[in-house]
Length: 132
Image 1 (cartoon, rainbow, N blue to C red):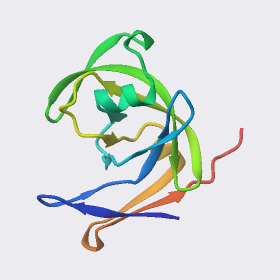
Image 2 (image 1 turned 90 degrees about the vertical axis):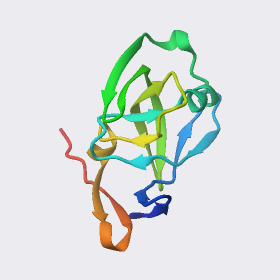
Image 3 (image 1 turned 30 degrees about the vertical axis):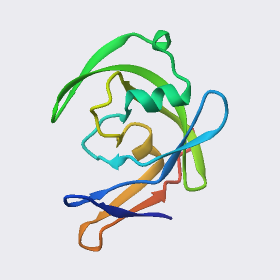
Image 4 (image 1 turned 135 degrees about the horizontal axis):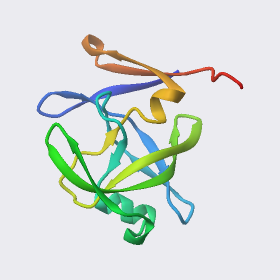
């Protein structure tokens, strides 16, 4: 089981300590909000550039959320959560003014996630994936 603590800001927020693999190979630490309301994991422009993504890698689309819409390019990446590494879909935002988010797609398929609000903890329990 992987355990994360809430991050203290104006209020406590559920934040994960995860890694994304750059195109050149090194892993880059990433601290997104764990957002069960977000469809996809979203990264800001600078992190996408650091990972080695190029604008030519995809077509710019607009996606909407609670704070409005943002231009993104959909890309694939490798994520490491605890000892587990797997491929995920990412929404690479073409601006900086978005919070990094760990969304449901691909993540919630791999883990059962339990929010323990009063204890300020988030538990990621690896799911036993069904074999076809």
